[in-house]
Image (cartoon, rainbow, N blue to C red; front, side, top):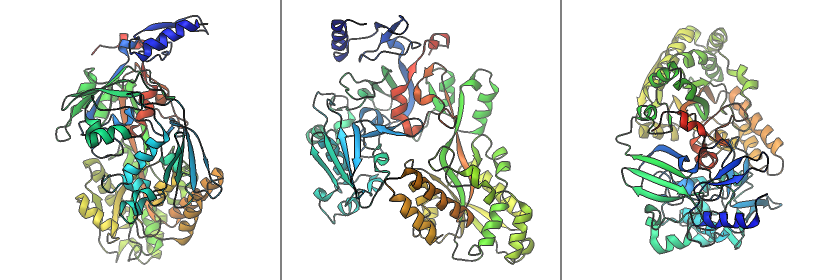
Length: 569
C-alpha cells in the first residue's frame, strides 16, 4: 500500500506538471510502475514517460474549436475539449462529462448530470452552463457554423438557425451547474450518441478573445485530456497531457506531435512512416499496399478494417426503364461484387449486399445477401420478363460518378462490362465534378449513378435515413418510411428498435431501392510499439485507428518498451 502522504506528494507534483517518471509499486505483483507527468500510472509494459510521444501528420487548419467550424477545424479540437459522452471501440456509449442521463416519459427531454469537479485548464470550473453556451453557439446564425445540420433533432434548432426564433428558444437549458436539459423535436433515442460530438467551448475565453481564442497557446483553454503547447503554422502543433484535467479519461501519452501540411501539397506519408518520422498513417493506393505487404516486417504493421461507408447504384425509379422493379433486380443480380473486389478494388473494398456495413448497429448482411446475389441466369430472365431480352430495346444509359478516384472509375468500368456481358445492356460511365453530380442527385434528375455514403453518426437512422421519401433519392416506399419513423422514435426498447431497422433495410434491398456494391476497406500502418485499448480487436475482430474515434484512441494509447528495439527516429 502506498503511504497517504506519498500519494499527496505525487498528486502535488502532477498538478504542477513536474512529475516525469515517479515509480509506484504495483500492489498486484510488487513491480514498480512509471507515473506520467499528470499522475497517471502507466501500464506495466509501457516505456518511461519521456518516450510517451506519438508523431502524426495533420492538415494545418485555422481553428481548434468544435462549435466554430468543422471543415476548417484543426485535428487537436478532438483532444482539447471534453464531450458529454464518448464511445468505446465497439461504439458502445458511455459517459464523459456527463456521468449519467435520463429521458422524460414522453421521450422528448434528456437530462444529463455533469460530473462534479471538472475544470478548464485555467482553473475555472466546467459546468452545464458551458455546454448550454456551446450548443447555442453552434445554433447561433451569427456564428455561421458549418456543421449545424447535424443537431437538427434539438427542439427549435432549425428555426433558430433560420432566424425564425430567438436563440433562447433553443431546446437546451442548464438547470443548474450540474444539470443540462436537452429537448428534441420528436423522440430521438440516439441523442446521447449524437452528443459524442459535443466538444465544449469555453464561454469565458470566447467572450474575452472572440473566435480566435483557440488559435494560439496563450489563449487556448482546454477542458479535455490534452492542451495546446505549441502551434507553429505550416510546421507543427504540439499537444501535451493536461495537468488540470479532472475527467475520467486521463491519457497515458505525454505529447502528441502533429506535423502540419497544406492540402495543396500533401506529404509523402509512407516514406515518412518508413523513415520513422511518424508513427501512423493510412495507405492511399494499391501500389503502396502491395509494397508494404511484400515486406516481411512492414506487412506485420498493416491493419485493414471495413469503414462505415457503402458504394451503391441508385436509380430514378419514376422513369423507365428503372421504374420496373424487374430491371433493377436484373442489375442487382448481374454484378459480380467479388470479382470487383479482387481486381479494380483489390485491398480497398469488400462486397456489399446491404446498406449497413459490418460492425454497424443493426448489421444483418449475412442474413440478406442472397436477395441481391450474383446470378446471371436469373438476371437475364428478369430482364427478359421486363421486355428487354438480351438487352434488345434497352436504352443506352449513363452511369454518373461524383468526381471519383481512378480506383472507383475502374470499378465503374468493371460494372459497365458486367452489365454488357450478362445483360447485353450498354452503359456509358461519366465522372462528373461534384457540384453537377450533387445537383442532379438532389433534384432527382439523375437516371442512374454510382455513389458512396459514409456515416455521420453510428446509428441506423443515419445510414438508412437517406432512403426516406423526399430525401436523397426518389425511391419511395410507405412501409419503409413507417418502419423508420417508428424505429427513430423507439426510446424504451433497443431490441425492438433494431428489429424495425432490419425490417426496413430488408424491404429496401428487396425492392432494389439501390444495388449495394461494396463497403470501403481502410488500410493503415502503425508502429508495433503503439498499444492501447482502442487498437485492440473490436467485437468483429478488426483492429483500427479510427478517425471518428480519434479522441478515444489518443486517450488509451501508450508507447511500449518495444520502442527501444525498433529503429529510432
